[in-house]
Image 1 (cartoon, rainbow, N blue to C red):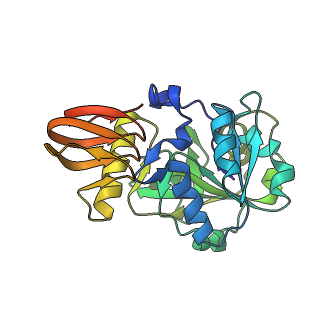
Image 2 (cartoon, rainbow, N blue to C red):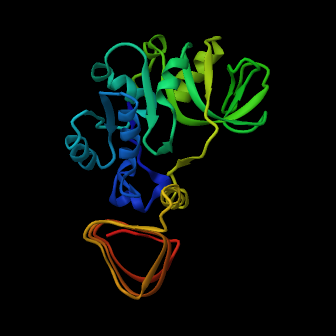
Length: 278
């Protein structure tokens, strides 16, 4: 299940126009990067939940043959959203992925490693750092400010995880996954483990990190820029780490650097460190 119902408040004003999962990163919407990774791992059925700009996500899901949409008329929280989608998900363990997280997680290895109530994908950090703490055996003993044992290492939880069938039965109808399910479960002695992910990843929750994710998308492909189909860039414009969306137009003269121009948008060079919408 791809968790995509949030309001995207940290990414405003971009999310005033577009649902956060649909903001373009490189040549496609952010959520499609997640969908493509899951497809490549053999996942054949995915549920996407939606609330903010639900009509936009409804149209996106309708264009994808292997996606189902779980609509929330009111925000239910991360835990409540998964509970609400129980019939679409079916029984058993479920892989959960926050739609604003871009990471090359080995999904098959994550699922194979899952052998506890929940398995969280964690970027390793020194003890005391990050949103989670782990004991010497890789069990979660700190989650946010709550502590449950002796910490040997820290880590940053990516927002990608496997939730076991037993914990799914305890999901509240409304509430957050961390504060209303995982922290209480850890307090009861339930075992939650970490799956190490020691590579770059991006949380596109802010305008700065969203821009960084686009620049990184170009760098990983060895491209100085990307120009989408039907885009028009004036002859006097030089592009450096710029993503120009389909149908966009860049007039003027001079450099366009570290900039994302959304599909259909019109703008004028020079530009530096900008996100241009329509």
